[in-house]
Image (cartoon, rainbow, N blue to C red; front, top):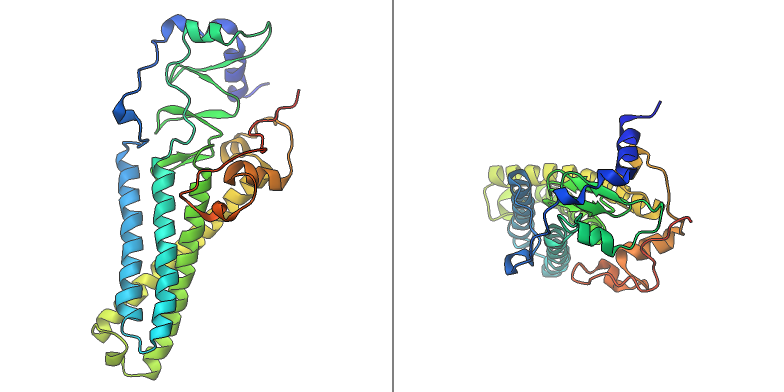
Length: 298
């Protein structure tokens, strides 16, 4: 017996199910549509919290630990590294949040568009009944974005966006840089506690000893929590990229209908071709070059 998911796919395979007469023409794009941003209350709150926590870590690292330090080289070196990584983390977050993840044009399942596809006899197309769009292969509908997203991995409230074909690089960089600054902050807290135990607490911070301890403990808790969370997420994303199987495809155990590529080529599909320092740059748009986005088994 077939599962409900399989029965749904069988219904979508029927040509009559497309019913293009029920779809209105897609809306015209205006100037306000040029920037992608999801108006979801939960996602916006999570995004604001993310930036607040990074700025809190910046405050504690710079004003509580580095500026009062007597060793200028130590403070300058760690300050440059931490602030640089924090800037890259926030830039990656902004790019992941404001980049179209690969949304399928809404309402394109019209009679004119279907005729323009020049489908061959027996060729299968899928229609999303929720956003009235012709779904490309490996696209899934997001109930929060209210759109079908190409190669959708999951919807992440922390970036207030779906992680899909066009913004997965930025999401991976975001998790990597957050994990790095979390680890760096934990190391600085450990060194600072050792220094304060050996010296007078009033000389190791511009704040009172109780306030200093509270600020450091909160930073330690934040750093440990986000280090574990983002490190696990980073590893999960890299594994998903290397195996060329999104989180949803793994969860639904969907049949693999695309050709298998090497892990290195799968990385190039997401981060760009060829390998370069631009892989670590959230401002560089991936240049796929020879990396074929879709290779299907015929």
